[in-house]
Image 1 (cartoon, rainbow, N blue to C red):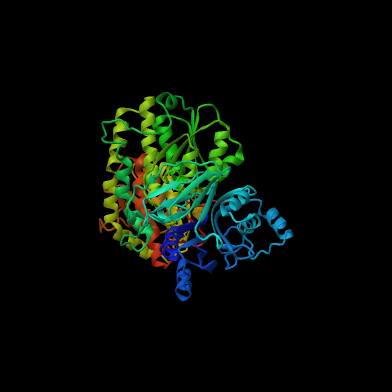
Image 2 (image 1 turned 60 degrees about the vertical axis):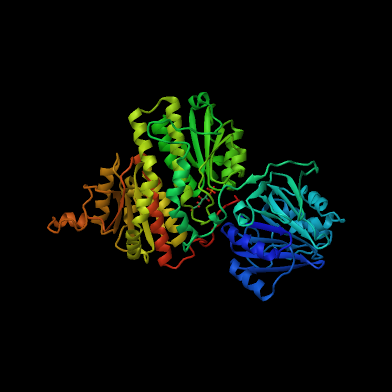
Length: 623
Ligand code: F6R
């Protein structure tokens, strides 16, 4: 759960590494460091804290050299400290490594290395690699890395440099992501393409147990037996500035605002009009296979799990396939029954989340077919799935997921429509109504973004509170869960999501004027019950922020009738978030947007680090 970057060429390695680390900071930001090779020695700077501190340290004591590796860390083994920050050096200070992943057998290796006379300076698992490479080094760095890697268990992407071999950068991968970027007379490594997109659009996506020897002019890739491996060059399809803030104060804000365009890209080529069938490429399922699906299990973590909660509704309602949704970290522990014909839909923005991968592998072992709903192309989930439906969100940098969530739901909705069409399980009217709503989603999203100021006004009223409840029923329970997650992760307000039906069984005890309740009540089968639940909150002096479709006359409306019965006035929500009407089943796509904005503006008013919330990292590659 860290980011690595490396450069070899003719320019200052520090500039390229620091710029790359800035784009990787979403992967971790508790400490950072860069090492360069120059004049026959390695020179190192590392700091605790965010990259600005590393930049200051480099301003005060610049690093020279055109070969360098850098790292931004999210602590797993050993607290955030200068000693535990990467790069880590060997005893003689002539070999340096950066690492993303976890070395599972590091304690055993450390004991052996200490017995052989090596002195450790940190508590990290990574440092064993620096000493192991030193142990094996006899003049050929790649060979030393190859031998070292054979002793490691766990997950890793390493960048390795050596003062005695200043013309090469060695990189190796097992389970943690790694790309090699291709330049002219210069080359790069990085944990993801976004880190080096400003430098090049041509990359090799490195596979597991592949070893790279990278010089200014050459990239040699082999397996761990040194047999050459050929990769096609992958041309990054998004522009260089896609990973920049583009005038927005925060990546999260930019990504919320990117949703209309991203939705259009996700729909393009799959759903052209409400009269035409949905089409998908490469999902690895023939019409016969779709007809043969007997059960669907969604699995994912966090926000992606919430998209799965929506997916369960869509698959059951439209494709009439029994569906479950399980948190990836839990799925494998409960030994699920996986009958023949089970399809596991794995949802993940990064495609690298450790728990999600474990769940995928467990379901595969039990015989399920796996379909990945993924953003990052060629990620590990994508590689290990039988088929992939890419959500096509482009890079998502803000730690709190926004556009990936709405596009995950959109993609799953398209899959549910496709399955329903192949299986003949939904009426033409229902299919058409849902398609019309999906086709309208980008315009609805634009409209909701135009209404941002109304959300800012609500945020101003509540930003000093410490507790919030998010209530909904049916498919929008996912919206409540996602809205509450966004609120707590970036504003640190304790926010809980509940089925409104559960309120009376306990949580209603929390209701008081000092908190606020977001009640999500779009028109549909659950609407009247939701309106009733809202009134119950109001009757207990709970401030209500209601989310409803434009023109909903059943919600007692603030200020519409000054002569209204005082009982009606008391029942009025304190604040309204109006949303363009859409089919209830796919309404979570658009309802997400004002809830993302509410969390964003509350966090901004509280002065929090929105793009880098405390204790979090974008991609959780540890279990
Ligand atoms: C919350 C958030 C996380 C991720 C979760 C899964 O805003 O971003 O909850 O959704 O860590 O990540 P992916 O989708 O990369 O598997």
